[in-house]
Image (cartoon, rainbow, N blue to C red; front, side):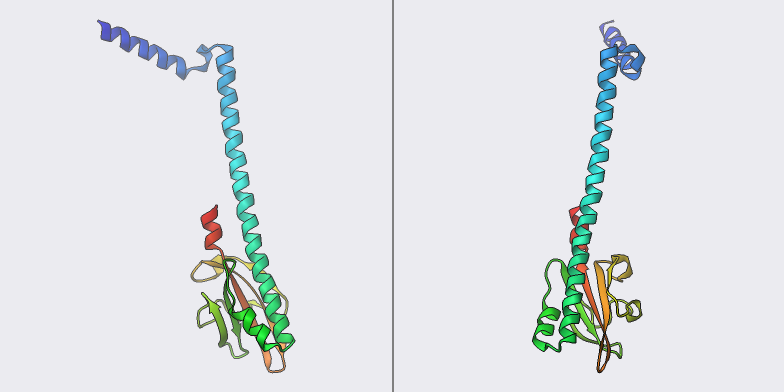
Length: 171
């Protein structure tokens, strides 16, 4: 008999929770306020995550574009020491550099850059192209910037890869 009463009380309590109409006005107001606050926090968290992710990608793109610009300037000024330093230095933003000769062969590379062009050199022209998504790279692990540069011996292509895996793991 006692278990029947406890069971009936439990069912009655669960029935009250299922229906907001049976709650008092202050309880309904508190429940709705809680739901609104929860949704607001979820929306704000998602928005901040998107903003942070985009901001980190822009930082990577800025770093790769600046490195391409530095390498192009070194090539145009015939500064071999500067060129070698810019091509060989990698960090957490710039993870790969390639200098590709007019014949399509990689003549200098550093970091994670393979012995073949990361992407076809036909993707680039004499203007800086930045922010190429990591989906364009076969290994899917770096964003690219690049540019062709005219020299007396032909058009060289500079490709710089920025580390997008670190960005993806942050967000």
